[in-house]
Amino acid sequence: MKEVKLKLSNRNFILKMIVLLVVVTVTSMWAYNYFSTKVFYLDDKKYSEKSAQSTLITKYTAWFGKPIRINNSRDVKELQIDEDTYLLKELGSTGDKETYLVTYPSGNVYTVEDVNHSGFLLAYDKNGEVVLGFQAYSNNERILSPGEEYYHPSSLVTAAYDKYHERQGNVFLFILSILFFAYCWCVFRKEAFQRFLFKLSYRLWVVDPEPSDFYFFMTKAGAVGGMVVCGLGLLLSLK
Image 1 (cartoon, helix red, strand yellow):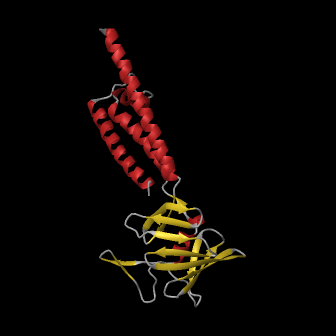
Image 2 (cartoon, one colour):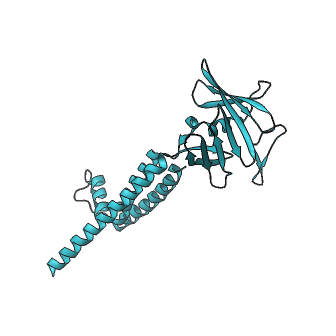
Image 3 (cartoon, helix red, strand yellow):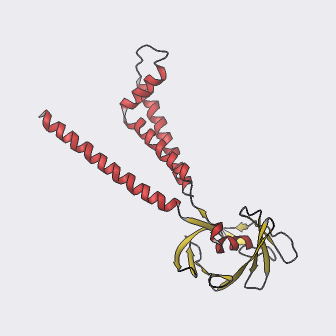
C-alpha cells in the first residue's frame, strides 16, 4: 500500500513539474514577443506594427484607434489616417539637432526638431513659435483650441520614423512581480515555509520558537496582500 502511495506521489510530482515547465515556457515565449514589440502613441492610443510590405508600405493598428498606413517609397513619407494624408520629410542633421518638415492636409506646415538627437521632439509653426502638446477633453471628447491641429506634429514624426518607437512594457517590473508573486503564494500555501520564515526571524532571540495561530493568520493575510500588489505590478509592467 505504501509503495502504491509513493508511486502516486511521484507521478503527481512529475505531472506538476511538467505543467510548471509548460507554463514557464509559454509565459517566457509570450513575454519575449510582447516586450520586444516596439510601439508609439498617437491620440492616446498605443500603436504597433501590423504588417509591412517589403520596406515600402507599413501598417500600424491600435485598440479603438484609426489604422495608420505609411508609404516609404519616396523621400517624402506619406502617413495616411482615414482619408487624410500627412507628408513628412527629413531635412537632415545640423549641429546638435535633426529637423523634419510636416505638411498637413490643410496645407499647414510645421518644423519638428530632435533636440540633441535625444528623441525629445519640439514642434514649431511657420512663425517659429513652439507648438505645445497639451490636450483638452470634455465628456471624453477632444476639444481643439483655435488653430490647433488634431494630431501634434511631433506625434506624427514619432509615428512615421520607427527609430522613435519604443519597446512596450517594463520587463524588469514584470519579472520582479512574478518572482514576488511566487514567493507570496508559497507563504500563503505552505505551512512549512511559514514556519521557516518564523524561525528565521525569531531564532536569534527565542529558544525553540513556535508560531501561534495568530502568526499563521497574519502571514497568510500579508501574503494575500502581497499577491494583490504583484497583480497590480504585472498590469503596470504591461503598459
